Length: 296
Image: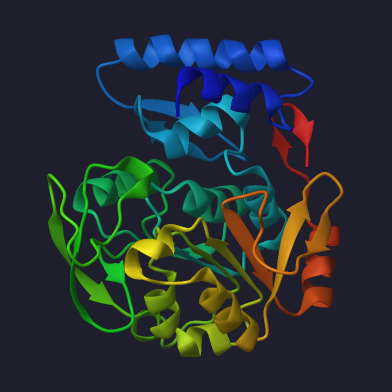
């Protein structure tokens, strides 16, 4: 993202609309301090959670600039999740969603991250928040069957499994497992899937997990990346609908679910929900969170 696009994103973000000058100051301060610091910088986040960020880590620096980088989906997590729940993060990267779920809310978690260097940064953030006992963090990919896959390793938040005929500068070969094998004795409440187009194999390897009635919500990135694997996103939608989910977006300030006819066209993520009445009751009774001086 160019600097001009980043500044536009910061100014337009819902959590910054009443404090644009403060938001721009945070951006400028981070740009200077992150370049002067000898390593990662600790940032105090939400409800006592913290993370270690380096310049260029877009998944974390966005949270510094705007509070919640992926605002509707991250706010939904804060509102719907409870301490007694299990959160599953498929494609955890360095841990933004896992930290919200398990440090800010206090839930238990699984964070699957295949790329070794990214996984080591994830572990650093878990340790910073004393989450080693609450979060399992397998350094593996997730797919339709056990085996191995080759991934990119130096593309920050968009590392992905190489498609047939694709090459990259620094490929890494990683073990792959299925959700059903990893979660055979677990009952998750909320899952996030961010696998850069590899959603269909993840779903195929997680049929039992997706059928578990405890799972009421899935936050899934659907941004067209499945085309690299020959996957049409309409297939993903049908697979989720077949499991009883419906597609929604979320309005955090109103705590309102908005039913969609298909994927969310205003965001890279689509929210899939079943047991709507149960979810709405959770949202209604959720604790309040303060983010950038705003109450959610």
